[in-house]
Image (cartoon, rainbow, N blue to C red; front, side, top):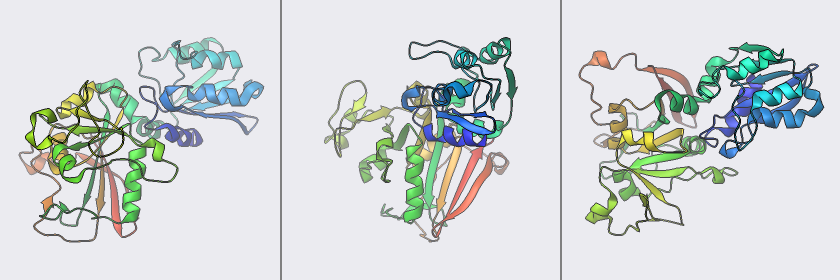
Length: 338
């Protein structure tokens, strides 16, 4: 299951609206097939692994991070049916599939064919791996990660606005890796106008994984005299302001992320007002904090008001998942407790 979970991470941020699933097929103590959900959601992980295993799948054990799907699609057959046809002996799934089109039906089909089914190994890891899909199913919105790069005293820039660079190269490379694992990245209007951010992935071999770019603004840029240089396209899209032929997409409020299609993992990168708005709306599921060993004093704080009324409200909201050094900077990852 650990190998299947590792394979599932290859598809994270590229498979929406389908989950990023990993699958390993073992027969006679040997791995005979591996698969992970491909970009765009097809082929599914099980279909890919079965294609690699071929006849060796008969009598094998299948480890998959999610219950095999039960619904037929114009884009491909149901994986539970493929597993039955292949004659596998058993299926071990980390999670059941909450999609109502499957939700137990996949496992029922396997059991009806005499295939042993086990659920649960690797469940916690699978929930983290497929957090985007599961959040969309449960809450009808993307899974939201907030990234903050700060000084020791919680500043994201000098008073003048200068912010490049607070953290060092290893921390910035890690942040670019995180970008590659999200379908979209969002910044506020102030960051967009002041910094002209490209928000792409600048890591060798991952440039094709640059996420969609979103702008949070309560007013459409057409209404702002300060945005006269914008080239505006139709359909709520903002034409290329800074480079290339890419479009920026306009989001009117944090709650409006529920209307975004094809986005299950959303990364928030700036600035303080935008970060505070998502925190105040209780929409942040994961926090990435990069802290540089510097003091700024009198700079721009990372956060403004997030709607808390007492210290009692601050405790128990965040659980530490990871802490490590990235060069001279400290990186911490927190999960929201709900």
